[in-house]
Image 1 (cartoon, rainbow, N blue to C red):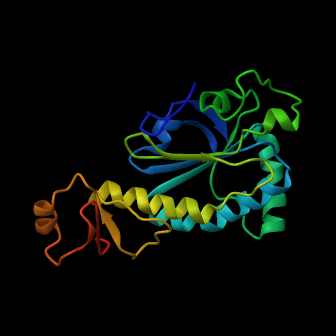
Image 2 (image 1 turned 180 degrees about the vertical axis):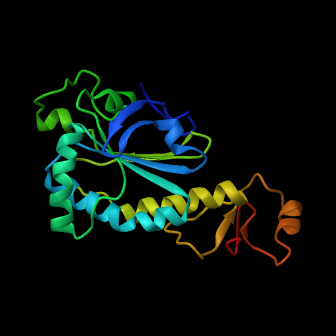
Length: 217
């Protein structure tokens, strides 16, 4: 199935390194990051999983759970995490889904629908490097996919989460390369009259359709 921003994130039950979970129940009333990998014991993914473990306290501060997925059994994950801690200096501190039969990968359109379990070529695996940002309402808020050869920028995932959460709380947009604490954009759906009420401290109008204001607290 094809998933788009705004769709409900498909629910599923799966085995993980922290036991069996039902995805929507696991999310609860929090935000969630679901990110996938082509295969265990692969070099780029090893660096990614270690860095995500390092960043997890930042996601915790943002009321956001993290879950990884790799299309191998949980037993392989448990062996792989030892290598991750040894080489990256951070122990994996979030659950990892064992998806050897590709059920979740296909459900989230992370892999070609004709791909099969067992031995897979690099071409079969090429699409299984996705990130989904999911809200407490279980709706997909953002998503992206990288090729196998390029490590993902998880600092950007964190920045994206900050932007999406800011929009959810204050109905503002963020400009190019925005970082937390910088000015934000007042959406065109908000009239000048309403903007003056909402931002009594004032805002800057660069064009009628481009108004910036200090980031709301």
